[in-house]
Image (cartoon, rainbow, N blue to C red; front, side):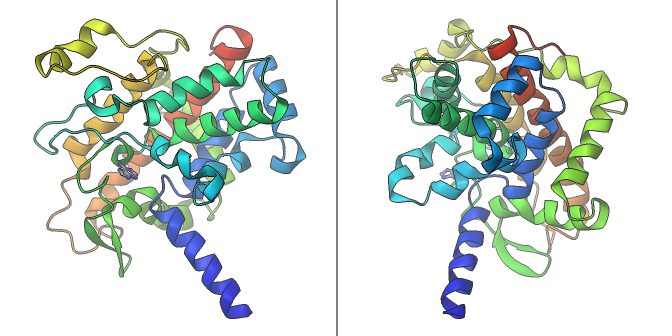
Length: 310
Ligand code: ADE
């Protein structure tokens, strides 16, 4: 019995490690967002999530990873990423039609759940589910390997992290985070989120926040001119029914740029989590988590209060 429980727990942890920021990264995005919600957004979040999630986007953020292995939610697996068919580290790009023509990717998922979370014709349960998906996917889109096709987003690239065999994707999801969380943030998502919030409010992130929100319309469709340059050349068309939104594409491109500037420069390091590779990755991860938390709050504020309020 104990062995079964241990094996079950191990398989959940192993599964999680290949599926987006680990639970800690997602919770931290949610906890940062909670600090910047405006009144109606906060009220919706609290009543929708209820006591099951301590009325907070922090504890609710990992839910989408927890359910994706269940048969009832297997359809949701492709919504956690976009397989950008670029060529890092030489050339990085995300293209709406090239990379998400069928509409089954994180770009369409954010657009879809953005519409659903404010759709009053849906049930309370359906709107809570939409909120939990937004909470999760706005985090995932900030993980550079969630916007990358190469080697299944790095899942098929062998790596060593803190002496253990793993893969590049898991190193970015949780391997490096686990090391600095323990060393600097008492192993706590709340402590980390509080530190990031402080940096946003009064520290080194403060001057970046207006740029972080330069795209904050929850309805602006993907800019057709920019979308079609490459797609026109390749004669690509979309068969998706959900109107793609500009902001998720902007966020994905920003995150994907790190694949060229840093993420794929892993050769020559024997242990990615205890070497200079981790030292270089930490500031990227911290900014991505802080930024996506801030953007999550701004997104919900626009939806429920009509402006970012930030
Ligand atoms: N599965 C296929 N591509 C992926 C990616 N970029 N991230 C996570 N899982 C994936």
